Length: 106
Image (cartoon, rainbow, N blue to C red; front, side):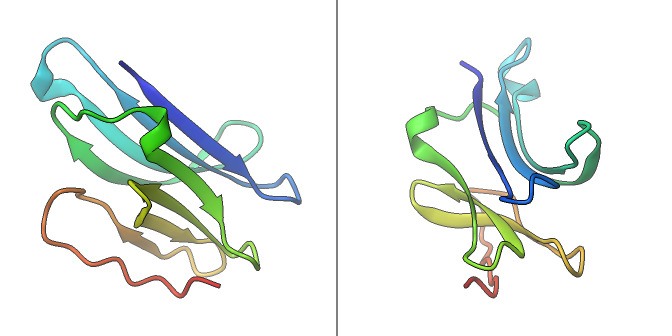
């Protein structure tokens, strides 16, 4: 099953988008977190995971922080990946591996 979630910044100028696609064969299944412009252009991408993943849309949330500087991907309620829209920094990815997302979240 494909899983998708997104959140648009209040100004309408940027969106955080999560996409998990099941392809032909479990090795080609992929999950990415993207930073998009309104015209559909991808600004940046973070590889979250490859392979079979038992998640549903209820397990995923894309949220902006209070100042709408950072947009984050929450998996099972845990901040897993994020973009800093002012500096262009990317944080996290590789869900299920040993990583620690340290994002100045407000």
